[in-house]
Image (cartoon, rainbow, N blue to C red; front, side, top):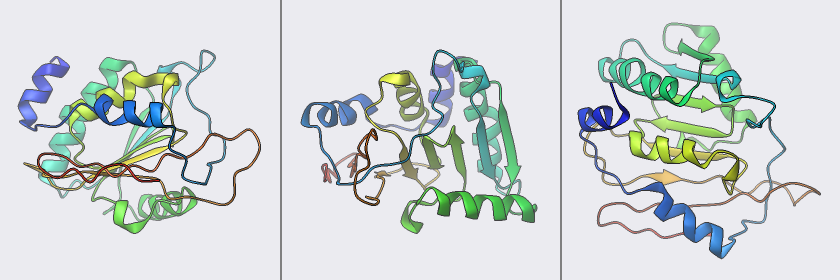
Length: 195
């Protein structure tokens, strides 16, 4: 099944992420914080080796379809092979791991969804993020203008708005990239970009 067929299957409309990230590149918005370096995929580390961990619930029928029939298929088409799916509802160890990971990465409660996808801890997708947004993020590769991004879309169908930001951390350190803080507005709700 092609990515385009998967997009149609979800019947989700969204704006192209490029329209949101290009202004950030040109404006150079700096939030006043930085993130520690992370092991992003490079020429030495192929996409196939990049770890992807998905935390979802088998009890959620829509989540199961979204994760295993849509997202996992898209990730495999792009070349990801190291994909782990964990049920954080029935597996207490996975639940604790998710809590510790979100705390370690500084993901605020308001950006945590009912399922979470961690792509090398640099792209974090919370909830049912539309496939076009995921593919646009993955296409950026090493050229992405951020160290880490969190995208939340916690509604299952007909989403009206999305959130994406990473809160400022401590004062900037040497040799660290800035965090971009983004307020995304979608269909009829342009929240703009803030620093």
